[in-house]
Image (cartoon, rainbow, N blue to C red; front, side, top):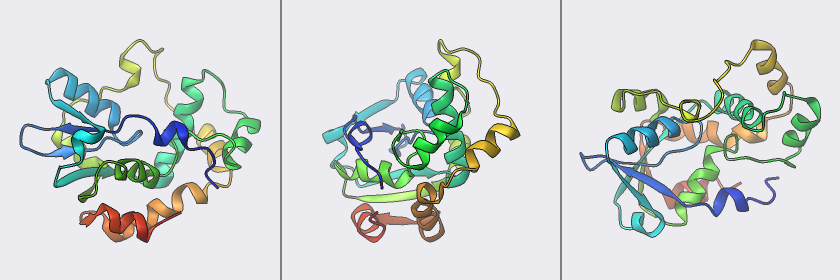
Amino acid sequence: MFKNLTDILTTNCKVVKFNNEQFIYPIFKNGRSSLIEYSNKNNLLLLENKEISNLKKITVFLRSPEERFVSGVYTFFYLAKQSIDENTLKKIENFDIINRHFVPQYLWLLHLYKYFKGIIEFKPVLELYNLIPNRDGPWTNNFTPWKTITQEEKDKILSIKHKKYIDVDEKIIKKYLNKSVKLEKLIKEFKI
């Protein structure tokens, strides 16, 4: 199913440390740009890779899988500076193109698992905005102005078979949202 995950699983794994000893793992399309921008403006510490291995608990904000998939695919096209076309959508559907913006949130957790074996606290992404006031995203730094997705573009993206992109995340959210779980248990339970 998910072929060649090198670009997803070999990047640096980063966790933001808040002053109140809360650690947050930012996931693309789950407020990550806002969180990183906030951490930069407020001089918050970013821990990477082995620096996170001794932490006890990390908070992960999860987003509605289908909403995130649509937003992620849209972002992929936007960053590639191309219109949403059926040929590229078909490649996404067949897993010939995968990208960190729309792969399952589970794969982000698998990436985190390389360095962290402790407790994950799952919260809905909307709660992130109670923690940070900004909505700074990639469009604020040297990008052309962000264009809001149209209903037609959403419909095009949703027309492809995308269930395999969202199934595992829906199960995780159903079982663990607003709860904590040892990451190792979750990785084994939902292995894809």
